[in-house]
Length: 196
Image (cartoon, rainbow, N blue to C red; front, side):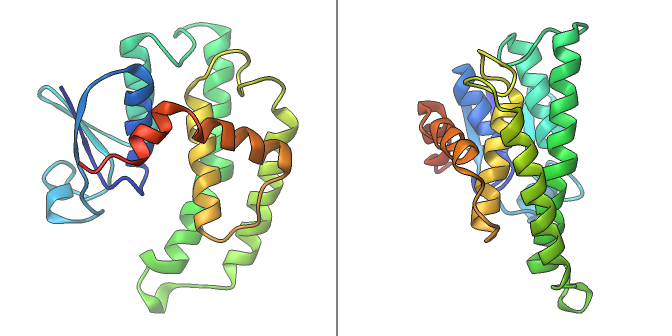
């Protein structure tokens, strides 16, 4: 059985949601970043981590792709043009949404007070809004890659949810309604309410 390391209100949620979508059982250790528990699985203390047998994997997106490939679901097959398109969108989401949110978090509560530059957050919010508008324009169907839910859908929804919690401007109605439909999925609800 898999074991997910990390609190639900972190990027561990992405991994838990994917496991729920795959119908795979897992244990959950809801620890905080840089905690002693987290450092038992990743010396840096970063979460999430995934324990699969003797292997400990790190980085939420790498874990998600590993699980999707392993179980042959929520992803295009490796070595296909469809997979290259999916990977391109995944990397774009990491660069243009996730990284912006992480930068805002660092300047809000991660960095020591003397290293924070609160003024940077306005430009990060503007950049995120630009990326959200691009993603909204791209959305042409029930899911980002077409007719089937894939990793980019989970990643984008998680980033949109994170942006709401971080006080960023709401995304437009098209993208907001899509994200709501993703949050209404039973697998999302199961992962979001998991206590450990």
